[in-house]
Amino acid sequence: MKLVDGATMIMSGGSRGIGEAIAVRAGRDGANVALLAKSAEPHPKLPGTIYTAAKAIEDAGGHALPLVGDIRDDEFVTEAVARTAEQFGRIDIVVNNASAIDLSRTEDLPMKKYDLMTQINSRGAFLLSKLAIEHLRRSPNPHILTLSPPILTDPKWFGQYTGYTIAKYGMSLVTLGLAEELRADGIAANSLWPRTAIDTAAVRNVVGPGLQASSRTPQIMADAAHAILTKPAREVTGQFFIDDDVLEAEGVTDFSAYLNGGREEDLVLDFWVEPKGVVGADPSKRI
Image (cartoon, rainbow, N blue to C red; front, side):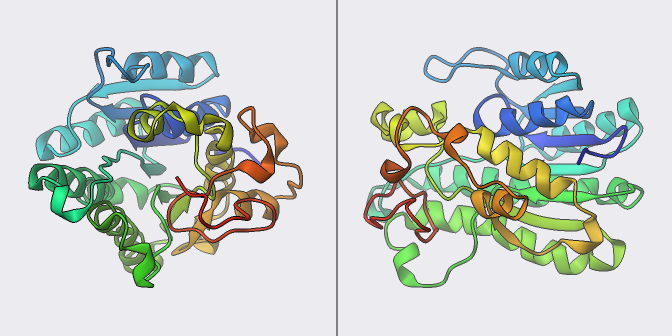
């Protein structure tokens, strides 16, 4: 399946990692992709900028619109949505990818970091989705896809990283609310989350480089996102997808292509997911 002809995606973040992989996958279908990110200059620890991502999208066959700014800035996001619609004539897909992470325990988490996470994660997802709705209503297959986890209320999922969990669950609440609110408009709102750790520069920066061989590559999230975004919007909304479940439903049985130099049995589970099969057989092996 391919994205609809002329499809336009607007994504928060996307300079590197999972977001870039999703954007480049859309580019392979000839999609137009607008990226909203602050990363105009190289980061000392995180390779890639909004411009290198834009080039990768265009090299894949798509059309890129890099828009430099802060997802927390209402004026910037409003202008970015307007520019995207003006340049490409439509908006079909919103991907809420931008996310801030701090794994400090509650006593050690500065409120400045807490505010940063909630403003970028949950507020950013709400704002970008909100401003795109009027354009999505005119799309032949409108989707909002948010990279956030299933909402699990067992306290064990909160206790380790309370501040970060609140910020990410806020993104998931955006999915739940918009799926119901926009159901009559035929606009799909779903979330996608990885079963295992994904090897990105951001993850390496937070938890260290030793996780690489126990991770999958970002391409598994890109392929899963593509599978969701090519489905009829009226038939799939309000769901919390896990990447390998999505691909299994598409007929994928061999996930070795997504390994990052390690073995399937050594993969480490990501947050907020249960073990499945050989993957993460030891529940204590988590990012």
